Image (tube, helix red, strand yellow):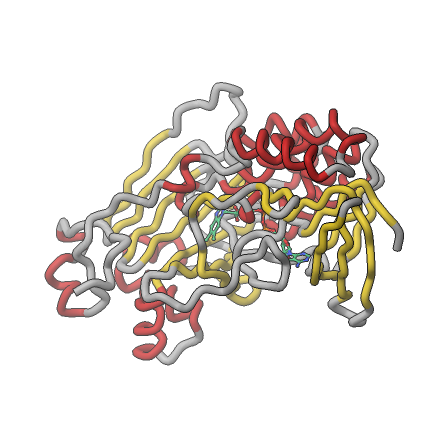
Length: 386
Ligand SMILES: Cc1cc2nc3c(=O)[nH]c(=O)nc-3n(C[C@H](O)[C@H](O)[C@H](O)COP(=O)(O)OP(=O)(O)OC[C@H]3O[C@@H](n4cnc5c(N)ncnc54)[C@H](O)[C@@H]3O)c2cc1C
């Protein structure tokens, strides 16, 4: 297959943005993506205002805006029977955030990379990456034909996210399941009676979620729930996981009923996780990590896409002027150290778990004691205790 200046592993926002920025600067780039696009993905799909300057700079902001849902200018809270909402402060740029389905956003970004000359192989998974004195040798496998591809690159950028395990040196081994693991679910709905421009946070014991209009008249719902809660729900309801979680949300959050009473789910529930909020190394064994691979915020922050793309920008700004030196491990280390010091794309938000009070249990007896509608406490990250 030959040799490239850069190999990018993963075609999410971090990977595509890395490929776009390097290709714009004249680098030859190969991007490997495990899935065939368009593909749906667990995500709230909200693009906060912080995304626009970079999307504008790489020439895709108008395409994203045309495809996306309405401007989001109100936040809300659904808690028991309580529905609260408030206007968001107007962003400094005067451009509101919007939501766009990941099957469309990720495809738009990848198409832009291809326009700029990036070679894309999908569905193709990177299986191994080995460094030597002269760069890296990578082995990839087609997910459709099983064929292997050998490729060389001076620079390797790991943008494979954080929810999948694998044999790459930058992928963490799958940790043993823990009761407090947070698992993500997502579905699209048509005909949801959600006020235009409103993005409510949905609170329920064991987790939280959000809803927003994304594109083509669809509303996107994403939910996070603790593993121990999910196990109990599945045992008691006997339903598939996504339906069991929604049933639980309905039980505890009647404020959601009018929004979804006439709505129809489009496509199956998706699930992912465990979600691993936290800051990880952004340079390891000569490989640069971007996006979720380098650090991940709690989904409630709804800035993960922006963090992923800004991490790509931070890295590209440091790589581009030193292209000629990138065959040298010492030069890569210097860039890696500088990139890590700049934040490596991981915001401080990544290390700040939601501060919620403990005390909730998943069960009817406890519900009577501390139902949110009767003034109970908010859900906590330690529900499973006691
Ligand atoms: C429930 C939930 C709601 C969220 N809501 C929002 C929100 O509203 N707004 C927001 O900004 N963020 C949100 N986020 C966070 C956001 O989804 C992530 O931060 C973002 O997807 C990170 O982008 P990424 O490119 O780093 O990784 P990903 O988007 O995970 O992309 C990684 C890509 O790499 C590919 N890949 C993996 N392994 C390999 C391999 N070996 N070879 C080739 N390809 C590989 C995968 O197929 C994938 O396409 C939410 C997250 C969750 C869990």
